[in-house]
Image (cartoon, rainbow, N blue to C red; front, side):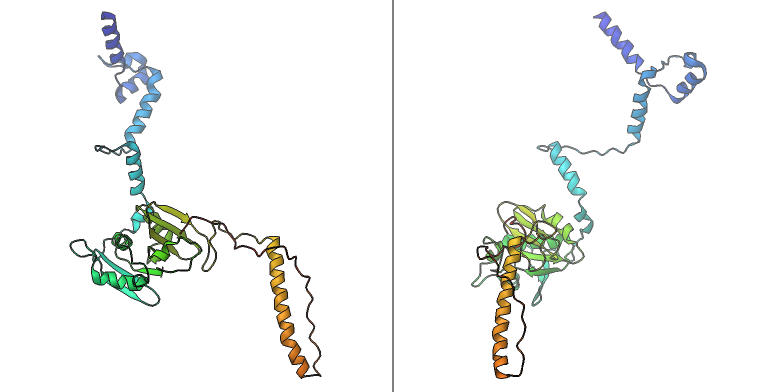
Amino acid sequence: MRFFLLHSLVLCHSLVAVSPAGAAGKAASGPKGASSGQRLAPTRRQPVLRHARLLADTPVQTHRVKQGETLPQTTARSEANNAAWRRYVKAPKEKGALELTTPMARFAGPVVDKDGRLRPDALRALSHLLGAGGKHPPLPERLIRQLVKISDTFGGRPMRVVSGYRTTSYYGDSRHRLSAAVDFSMAEVPNAVLCEYLRDLDGVGVGYYPNSGFVHLDVRTLSAFWVDYAGPGEPPRSTPRPAKPTRGSNRWLLAEIESMVEQSKKAIDPARTASPGVPAATLPTLKPPPVDLPPPSGPGETIASR
C-alpha cells in the first residue's frame, strides 16, 4: 500500500508542466537550469504539450444537454442551424398573412386571426384561387397553415402559384386531384433553398423541379422527397438528360410520317383532277415499318408518386 501511494505521488509530480522560462533554461544550460522545486517534463511528452497548446487556441463550442436529448439530436440541430435557407429568413410585416398570385387572380391579406384560427373569408378566397371547394375537394387546413408558415419564415414574400387543384397528371394518385397540393415559387428565394426548408416540415411531399421553375408541396401522412428533371409539359424523368429514343420508336415515327404523306396525296389528287395541265406531284416513297412494334412509351423513368 505504501509503495502504491509513493508511486502515485512520484507520477503526479512528474506531470507538472514546464513554464516558458524553465524551457528556455533547459535549452541554455540543461537540467541544471531548472529553478528550485521545478521538475522538467520528459522529452517524450513534448508533442503532447504542443498538441494541448493547439487545442487551447481552437474555439470551443458548448451545448447544455437537456433531459431526453442525445448526441445525434444535437448534431442534427447544429446542421440545421447552418442550413442555407436560414440566410433568407426575414421577419414578416404582418404575421399570419399570405400573398399568392396566379395569372388570373391574386390574394393578399391576413389568413390566421389572433386566436390562431383560419379566417373564413380568407379560406373562401384561397379556395377560389387554388380551384378547390364546390364540386372539387375542399382545401385542407393543414396545407394553408403550411403556406402561412412558409410566408412567415421568409418575411411574407409573394408566392407565385403555378398549379393548385387539377385533374390532369401523370400519376393516378396525384394529390393535386385532392386539392392537397400546390406548385409554387417565392420571390427572391431560390427554389433549391426553398426545397431545403420544405424538407424540414413534417408530413409533406416535396418535389424539386429544376427545369420547370417551381417546387411542389403537398400534405400527406409520411413525408417524401423527389427530384424531377422534366421541363414544362414533359413527362417525368429522374435523370438530367432525356432518354435516347429506342430503335422501335424511330420505326413508329416513320409510320407516322408515312401516314402524313398519304394524307397529302389525298389532298393533292382532287386539285390535279380539277386542273389537267398541272403535272402530278412527286412524293417520296417510304418503306413501311414493321407492324409488330408497339408505339414507344414516354421518355424517362417512373419516379415517386405525386
